[in-house]
Image (cartoon, rainbow, N blue to C red; front, top):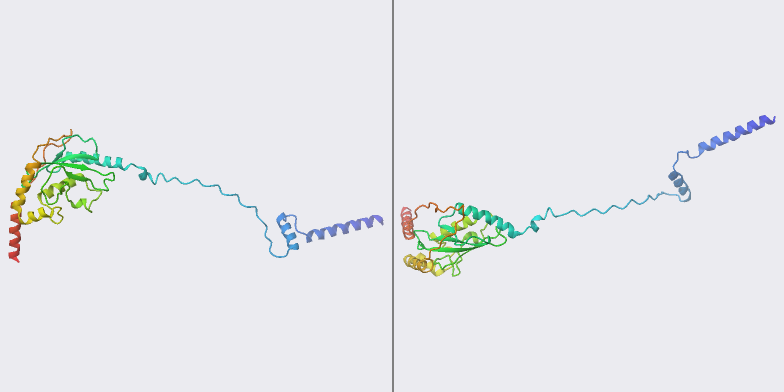
Length: 268
C-alpha cells in the first residue's frame, strides 16, 4: 500500500511539471524576449530595447586636386616660349613677303626683332623697317606688341611706331600666329585702314591730296629708313624671298578704282 501510494504521488508530480512547462515560454526564447516580457509587465506599452551605438566612421582622406589643377601650377612663361619657338621655326622656313630676320640672333624668345622691306609700288619701297616684337607672358591668349623702330609716315602708325591692326584691337584669337600678323602689317603698308586712322591729318591727306602724301612718305622713308640692315639667318631659314605677284603703284591702283567706280555709277 505504501509503494502504490508513492508511485501515484510521483506520477502527479511529473504530470504537474509537464503542464507547467507547456504554459511557460519555450527554452528557445532569447534573453531579449524574456527581458522585454519582464519590462512589459512592469511598464505596459511599447518597449524599445537600446541597441549598442554603431562604431564611428573612420575619417576619409581628402581627394587630391593636383591632377585637376596642374595647369594652374604650370609656368605661363614657359608655355609661351614653347609656342613662340615653334612659330619662329615655321616663320623663317616660309617667311611672309618682304619680311626677314633681324640683325641679331634671338636670345630671348619673348623679345626679338624682324625686318620689313618696303613693298614695291608704295612710298616705302627701298626702305628698311626694323620692327620690335614683344610677347606677353599670357601669349597666345594675349597678342604680341609690334613696334616700328624708325619713323614712318602712315595714317595707321603713330609717333611711337605702333600700328593699328584689327587683330590687335579686340579681334585677337589664340590661333593667330606671328606669320599672320606680319602679313597684316605688310598689307596695311600697301593699303591703309582709313576707318581706323591714328593720324587724322595724314589720313585726310591720303584721301584728298594723295600726291602730297606720297611725296612726304617717300621723304620720311629716305630720311629715317634708308640704312641697309643685314639679317642674321638661321641654318634652316629660307633666304630666297617668296614670289610676290606684281602690284601696281598705289596711285595707279587708286586711279583704276576711281574709274571702275565711275563706270558702275554710269551703268546704274
